[in-house]
Amino acid sequence: MIRNSQNQVCNIELAEKLYNLGVKQESIFYWRKYQFCKNADLYYIPNKETDLLQLSGKLEKNFSAFTLSELGEMLPQIIFVPGNCYCGDSICNNFWLDFNRDVEIGKIKIEGWIYFYTNGEESKKFDYDKDNWDINEANARARLLIYLIENGLYKKKD
Image (tube, rainbow, N blue to C red):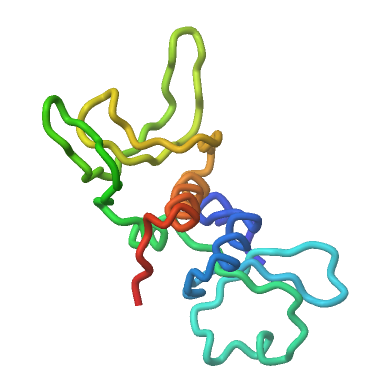
C-alpha cells in the first residue's frame, strides 16, 4: 500500500469508471480491494505476470490507478468535433488539448486543474458541462478522458 503517491494517480472512482468504459488496464499502480478488507488501497505492481495476489483470486476490485504520465499518453493532442465550429470566418473542427491551473475569475479563485480542448479562439473552447476542476491533476485528466469516451470523441489505442 502506497499513500504518498495518491496525488500522482487518479482516484478509485475515476479508475473504476475508466475500467467500466473499457480502457485497457495497464499501469504500474492499481487500486485494489481484497476480500475481508474494508477499503481499497493503492499498490505498486511493476510486473503483472508475477502478481501472485491477483492470481490468488482474493481480489474484489482491481483497477488501474493511471498516473499523470499514463493519462497524458492516452489523451489525444487534437480531436475533431463534428458540426460547424467557427474560427473567425472559417470552419475549424480541430481542437487542441490545453489546460488551466489556479485561476481567478472576477473575485472567485478556483484552485486546481482543468483540461479541455480549444480551437485557438478564447471564446471557442470545447468545454464539457460538469465541474471538472480538480486539485489532483491526474483526476482532471481522467475526467476529460471519460468525457471523450462517453461522447464518442476518443478512439482507443491498441
